[in-house]
Image (cartoon, rainbow, N blue to C red; front, side):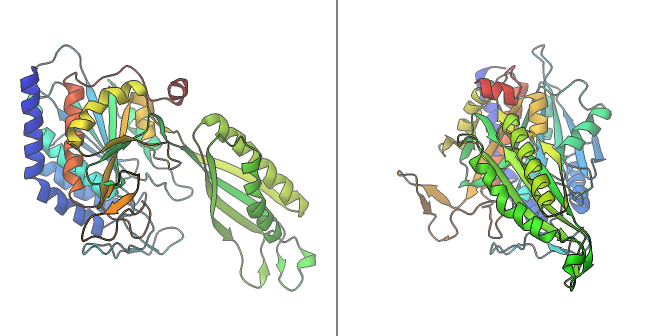
Length: 449
């Protein structure tokens, strides 16, 4: 395809994205008002299936890893001899957050049946926008399929935020089930996704190498001996041991090289008992995050040693379990350099800028580590960056920069068209041979770079 033909294709994408902007906004608002927690995305799945059917996309499989969807758009253009397939991914679950965004389409939903609930539910991490943007790109690319040299694998993934304790779910399970069902034979030649972030509308951020931390869920169990609250000496109270674990675990930060970034967050405690009973067992739940596997393993060993020794000092038994391990998101330099021209073209003068690695995790890493590719961070909020690195709110909107997972998190609908264009143009560039790299997004390669 000549440069002029490719330029015409970009123009067609941009015009098509603009033409469906109101539809994409409508989809986003519906999803925002009807959020569903991890592994419970039933209505979300149904809504996506309805839209794909409207677009004429027929090769669709649902029910993957719970409520995940995979769908094919088959290109029919003249091939240059290389067969390419790009995987475009969006996550679909919401968070147990009571929304306070001020939007007239804010969620008021409460899930009364979710384990540990009832919980208010909101799309406080922007997954509603992720779905809407990929749906928009699906419509655009389906209409252009006769001109595409290769295939597009659409993936709508549930449970990115993590399934309830004891339930499987998320990208790891989706990859396994998709492989069993033959989706990766032949394998995609690139994976791509977008996450909405607190940056100016249309800006695109990225990290070179490791972009998001690896993460594991940690479950600490302290077991004592249950007894009546009036006679604590007749049993073994696990609570003092729990207190020591919570207060002393922070000492691990003094034992690991200050240059190594990691975090331990213990955010949920479950006591099996009531106010007048000294219970038998207490569970502490949290996450451990690190930018490298070596540091993660070191920190995990230290946590296990602390828990065991502190529990023993109180006459209790302490055990630690680590699970739901998620690898880091890595933008391998070869893939990133190949993608940056597309970022610049789509941003159209908005900032495209490098950021340091984030301690937040995202299991899109399961796809990128396997197939190569990159993960874009798309700005969606009403502010601009000042020359000195500060933030200046957009006139008439005092909300400014609000982080993901906040009850006040918001996204300007104007960002949606940028996301539709970004998905579609990355797909076209890869399928047409303009965007390609041999590197895979592994932690080892990122470290070597």
